[in-house]
Length: 314
Image (cartoon, rainbow, N blue to C red; front, side, top):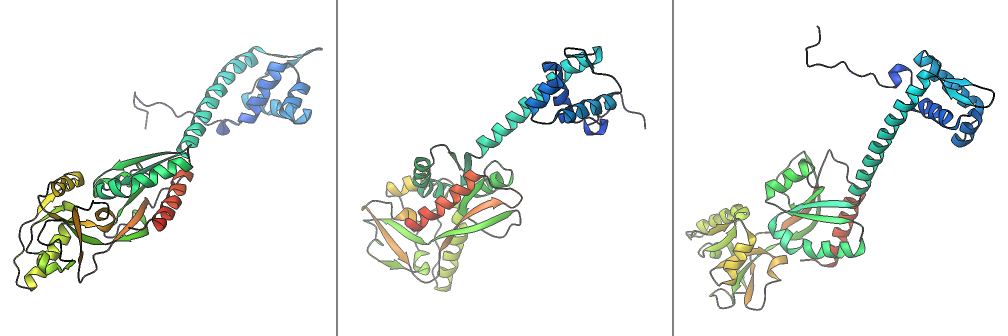
């Protein structure tokens, strides 16, 4: 099939033309120095090797490139053309190679962490701060995202890892559990439940809650426990943003369920109440893309994260 007007013939690779970079670099060295022996000394090879490389290049091109005189080596007209063009091409190739190596070097010193708002605001900031103190040459970026967005960031390589409570099963990811954090009830110190000490899910069903929309499954579980005990669950208010929920809590406008790691950070004007019965533990995990290879910075950060969480459990 003839090529379309917009198609371009593929450019053959150097190897397919019988030309290699070593021969080109050798020819350039001989042409610049005007000497086979000096080129051999600069390139740290024997002079016959230099001669063989140049002859191989001339054979591949089908033309004479260098002419020996009594005092030096000079380029032919074809050799002079090749010297100019090949020197420019190799300079550009070096620029590209050095640029890619620099990108790789910088990438190895940068880690992007995606996380959900609760964890991003409560558990990661201090860990990132301490990591930066220890590894001053590594840049750590934290992406505060909703659950699905955090996983998408890892899947598309926008983030190296995600730190979140992983739910379900997804073959795209490798999931490494690093901690467990249970849920507790947090109320203002003046609330009727503040002195309860503990409460069942069935009892909790009769109280309106402030909750994150991520906890809808937990609210459904509370409603089901209430139904079994003859309690009609009241309507709870859902929020997408943790800061908004905490603002409502701080204003005394409700009670809420929080991971213990966050609840313990509230001041003395709040009561933390244990929830009896079912295990409400949430597993904190590091999630990474199965297809991706972690850089040294990301690997180092995960190791540091695990160490810090062991030292400071919720």
